[in-house]
Length: 408
Image (cartoon, rainbow, N blue to C red):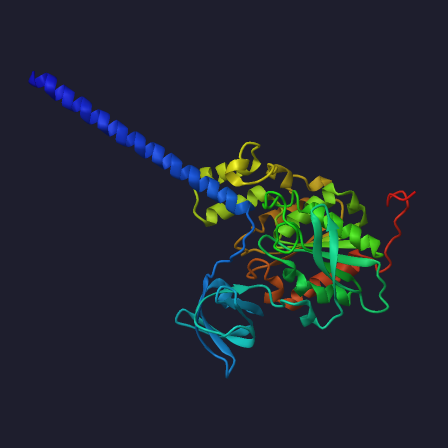
C-alpha cells in the first residue's frame, strides 16, 4: 500500500512537472513567435517616431557650444544635425572641440528652431532641412504615380547647362526627401537638374493599401514615375542616386522598369545591395538568435503571413541579392560606403564591386557610419561624385530613338 501510494505521488509529481514544462515550452514558443513577428513588422513598417538615443548634457549658446554624451555619432568629425524635444527643436552642429570624461563638446553653429535644452536628443545626417537653404532656384512639383500625386523638389540645372541631364535622388528607410539635399550642390555644379523624389509610405507621398515598405519591390514604381516626369520635362539622360534602402529601390528600378532605358548611371550611398545579408547583419547587432532572424525573413517572404506582418504581398528577398544578380547589371555605378556602417554592412558593396569591377567604382570610407559620408568628409564625397560623373556621364546626352522611347 505504501509502495502503491508512493508510486501514485511520484506519478502525480511527474504529471505536474510535465504540465509545467509543457507550459514553459508553449510560453517560450509564444514569446519567440511574438518576437519574430515583431522583428518582421519592424523591417517593413515605416518609422514615424525616431529613437532619441543621444543626450544633450549642457550647452552655451553665447559661445556656440553644445556638450553631448559620447557616442559614435557624437564623436564623428564633420557637420551634423541635432534634434531634441521629440523633434520639436533642431540645430546644426559643427566640428569637434573637446572629448573628455565620456562627453563630447562640439561647435553649435545655429539653432534653426526650438529652445535648446538638456535631455534626450538624436543626431542626424540631415544638415539641410529646407531646399531654400541651398541658395539655388527650386520648384515644388507633383509627380503622378499609380497611388496619386507624390511631391518632389526640382532644382534646375545652371543657366546655359541645358535640361537634358537629370539626377533623381531616392531616399532611404525611415527618411524623406531632405536626405538628398546634401547631394544637390555637386550635381548642380556638374550641370544636372536635380529631382528629389518621394515614394509611397514615406510620409510625403501617398500611402499604399497596406502602409508597408516593399524594401524596393514596390517603391520602384514611384521612381519609374519620377523618371517619366523627368523625360517629359526634357531629360534625355538620367542618373539615379539611392541612399541606404534607396539603393535597393534604384536597383529594382533599373532591372524592372521599362523607363530604365533613360538611365545612364547610378550612384549609391551606404546602399542595401543584398537584403538577406543586411537583415542578418542587423539581427547580429541586436543579438538575436540566427533562428529568429531567419524566421522573420521567412515571414516577410511568405504568402500566408499578411495578417501577422500587415504586408499586402510577400517580398522576394532573394531577388534583392544583387551580388548574386551581378551579371544582370550593365550601367556604370558609383558606390560610396563606410566599413563601420552600423545599419547596412559594406560587405555587399565590396562583393558587388569585386564581381563587377568593369562597371562598379567603389569609394570606401572607414569611420563615416551610415549615410553620413558627406557629413564626415564633404571634400572626398563630392570629389568622388564629380570625378565619376565626368568620366561616365557625358555632357552631351545621347538621343533616345523613337522606337526606344515608345514613340510612333
